[in-house]
Image (cartoon, rainbow, N blue to C red):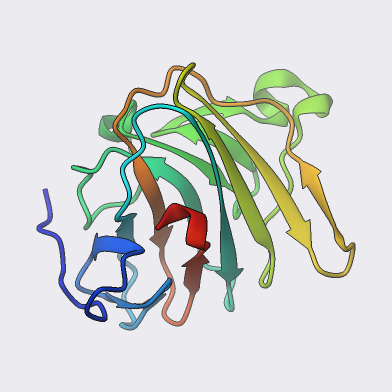
Length: 187
């Protein structure tokens, strides 16, 4: 497991740590180094029960991969979310590929390939906002997406189930200059 990184503003409160290739500044985390490696940031607030909503604002400049969702607070910071040994450790929106999906580690849980055309998950673009709606009382996670050109939040189909706590907000970035900001409710 990668050790938490302390490159954050003193008392920022949003993020507990990140990979060495990321920089935390307040609610924002940005990939600073040009590498093909994936980099992870984990939120500071642990969720164990109750209903919670928080928003991720996305900066995605070069078609790199950006994943957002929730993860175990002990998740490895130096490896992608999208791997078999991350099943039941990270639950997230994967909106940057040919196949877009809601995932549990390596496994697609909701996608048009798994559930048919009604389960199509939208592609993630620069400037989008993603809302995570987490219900830890029943272990469910749903997402909505906001596009400024459309001006409304749209719920994504389906949900991820069987989430075990505690979990924290989490993001995974691939390309230099890609970034994620997280809302006050995740602090």
